[in-house]
Length: 177
Image (tube, rainbow, N blue to C red; front, side, top):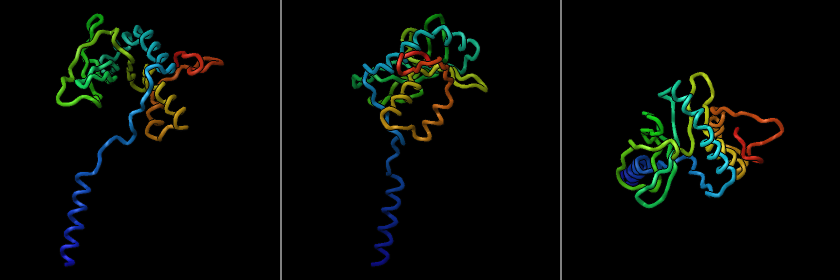
């Protein structure tokens, strides 16, 4: 009888180990499409595309963009991808963020117009990440909702460059940070 109980205990332990949830540590932040902080962030990203192109010319392997992606379930998600090629206003992108509401296989190599970009980043060696306007907005929205960022998000926030403006805040005026 004791052997059966020990065997059952080991079996349950193995099942727990192999079948436990491997979901995200931090759930995706749901943001209303009319959120003024996010609207301002997208506007700033689009208004700074010339800066993005200049930085991308200097660091061609360090460009990343956030683009709208229509999933096969009919939802539009905003995914990050690596810029693999830019020609005039056309981009070849390798999507690095998996969509949540897409089912089955998908081609991660996609083409977008520069005008489709919702956000951009360029990682400059030995410096802070340039761009990332929607990321900075999400940090701000998260803090407003939950009071503070978890350590993992705080570390990520500190990787971005923030431009400060005297006597103003990003949130009050929707200005570039």
